[in-house]
Length: 133
Image (cartoon, rainbow, N blue to C red; front, side, top):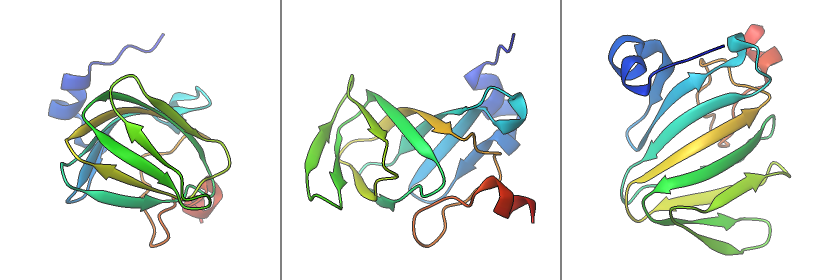
């Protein structure tokens, strides 16, 4: 059994907290936990806009608090993001995520991230094999 405390990770395990100027992500589960997925609590700053395309991962996201929108760049469709809304990027969908208010999101990645990933210029994470090289 794995039991982790969010506050303990933030205070004592800085290697599991990844961020840039507009977002931060607390990595609760990573690839080395051998669960087959990773689990993160991610914060997107008010007014921020992000273009992502996880070419090597599937992601499912559940909004816990805040307000924003997500636009599927293939279709142009925009969906409201608010508490209780979930979206799944089942086609490695290139998308724009906007935070009108700070968004707090629970995110699951498959395959799991290692914790060392940073967003590349195209908005994706490298595949695990690329990180190993």
